[in-house]
Image 1 (spheres, rainbow, N blue to C red):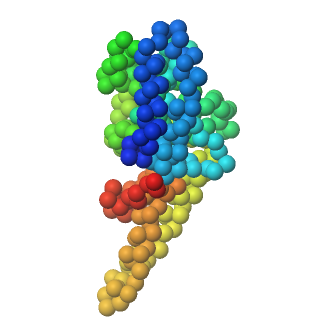
Image 2 (image 1 turned 90 degrees about the horizontal axis):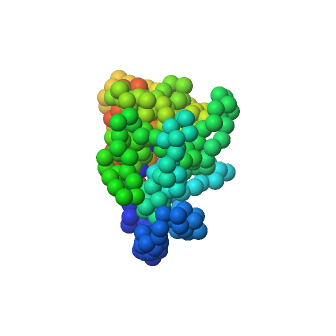
Image 3 (image 1 turned 90 degrees about the vertical axis):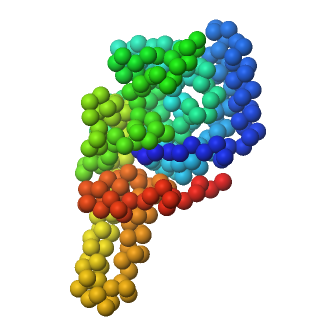
Length: 284
């Protein structure tokens, strides 16, 4: 899970207008007609899928998976028709006024968005309509759309602060970062569960990336040592190239970039992590 920068420049103006028209109609409807109208207009948000995908270089915004054999959804971060607030089954109408708001859309793998069973734990994972709020948080409604006052439990990949709360541990699992304390630790645990972030295949894929970074780092260390031993030949050795290859593993378009970044931090080499100015531009 890494930060995803939403870029409206990638979305055709025509598609934004379609969403605006659907929203305008929704605003005129009585409460008992809204859900049916939203369901009838599902083509509106599905039309955004390929543009949301470009913003994350084809990766799920939650899991960083880009498995071509998986299906992907346009998830509504705040559920559009029903929100499950607690594990006791408490529900309300959710956020119907956000059904056509593209800033509420997240490009999600099916297993992060829909319910399925974790092969290791046999627990049901997947976001579904789950959207609990932190204790004491106000809850926005159709009449009072105070979203900024809400404190969601689930981490949001478009929120820089949320993405600083997670790292990948030595087992390949998503874990709280060193600055994640208090209520945020529970937020991380719930996000891991409901986004299905620790499914066995995901953990193994992250571990593979971490092993690759470890091996590349060890080669770099040997090359640097050789350069220091023979200063006259230092400029001939491929230190910059080897460092560049490691940095590429941490780019947002690379598979499981957080795993690569976490391993480099563990190795004491955060300077090899890609900086925003290094990031490739999305393909339009």
